[in-house]
Structures are given as structure tokens and as C-alpha cells.
Amino acid sequence: MAHENTAIVDIEAPVEDVFRWISEPDCRVRWISGLMSSTGTTATGFTVGAGFLEVMDLGGRRYELDVIVSSVEAPRHLGHVIAAHGAFTTEATYRLSHEGGTTGVEFSQLTTYHHWIARFLGRFITRGSQQKIDHDLATLKQLLEDG
Image (tube, rainbow, N blue to C red; front, side, top):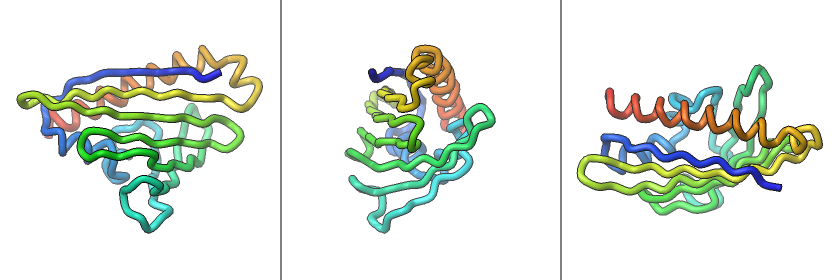
């Protein structure tokens, strides 16, 4: 059973700037809480199939996450699959729209938990994930709007 999280935020910044902040590793570590590093593992640049190793601290537990870009239509769409082997797999999508000086960001993720305890506690973990996502997007908004 997959667990879903969604979030929407409007950011007073050009869509190209917002896309750069959600896609480039050096920017992602500045607004995604717990993300310690994001390093490219393929020589393909930022294209479908490109891989990244992200190191994340979640609640004092360190995860090495394999991230594969699954879809990209710069600067309007980014999809990727995140795998923490033995723990979970997440399909995440960012959709960006732009009107006037505002960029709308729609984020969604579907997470499948692999360990039986995580599957049992999935709805509680999903609730905590939602709080983290909301916090992270608020941080992204603040960073981009405050310049």
C-alpha cells in the first residue's frame, strides 16, 4: 500500500529560479531539512535517468538515498524516484506554474514502505512526512522571496 503526501505553495519568484532550487543539489541541501549532501552519480547531467546519492538524517537515523530522475520538463516539471534500500521507495513530483510574478509549486509523493514495522505504522509516518514537506516548502519560499 502506497502512502501519499501533497503540498502546494505560491512563491514570489520566477519559475526558472524555483526550478533551479528544486533540482540542483547545491540548492536542495539549503531548504530540505535533514538533507546533508546530494552528489551526482552519473555523467548524464540533469536528464531523465540521471542519478544522485543523497545522504539524509531523519530523526537521528542516517539514510543513503538513491535518487533517479524519472521525468523532467524544465522549468515546469520534475519527477524522481527515491530508494532507501530495505526501508522505502518514493515517487516524487514537482509541478510548477507561473502567473504574474508568482510561481505555484504542487508537490506530491507516493511512498511504499518495505519493512513490516514501517508498513504497520505507515499512516503515522506519512503524517510526519507531511509536516516535514510543509516545513521544507515554507523554507524554500522564504529563501527565494527573501533573496
